[in-house]
Image (cartoon, rainbow, N blue to C red; front, side, top):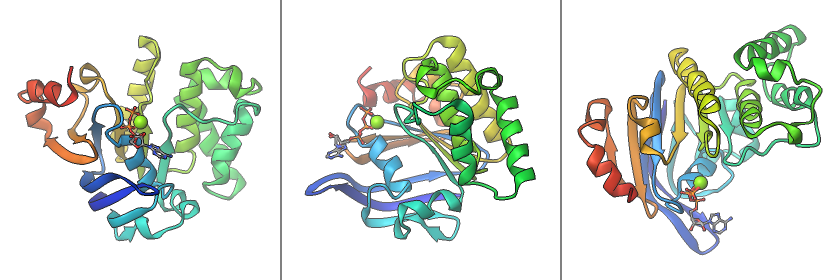
Length: 235
Ligand SMILES: Nc1ncnc2c1ncn2[C@@H]1O[C@H](COP(=O)(O)OP(=O)(O)OP(=O)(O)O)[C@@H](O)[C@H]1O
Ligand SMILES: [Mg+2]
């Protein structure tokens, strides 16, 4: 599904990612791990075209996302839930979902169906449609950001530390949605820093260190590799 190879990128003169490779398969949860500042968010932004690749490929199927302008990326089937949620905080829940739908299917019946599906997935949002997004709790905001990304029916869902700072019940709700999306055949690429949160949950783990690939763990390598994983992350 997603196959990144030889990706080099950064900001101005500062090169942050060097020759990075990463894959994410349909029907799997791939977790990208690394210490603070390793370049995880930068990698997500490269996929979205928000940071330009200086070299390398970001293949989604046959399409090289690295060659597309940012506004063309979501339409190719990539949903993005950025770190820190980035909602339109003055707008209501309903309006935020409407914006998500704006990027997705066009006809009214499909839009309604998609919206209803999101409210089924996140019943807490259904009760708060007229509330301003900025006044939602952290967990509810995360749900709204995820619902917005899912409105366009992505094949690839990117989530950048979606459970940061949330209480356990909210974390569980968001995990369940990730599992559901995986089971529906989406490729889920999750940035997560807490090892306990990914053990028994991730299908594969890729670790980056200072913008370079450090080590990859397949499904059967995660549990036996836990000590090495902890060493990479310094925890
Ligand atoms: N807009 C920017 N301009 C210049 N440097 C940046 C910019 N955004 C990020 N950086 C730098 O790039 C490096 C990687 O940042 P990035 O946000 O990708 O790390 P991260 O792995 O997501 O970290 P965290 O775990 O803290 O979210 C850091 O050194 C950061 O200071
Ligand atoms: Mg980050």
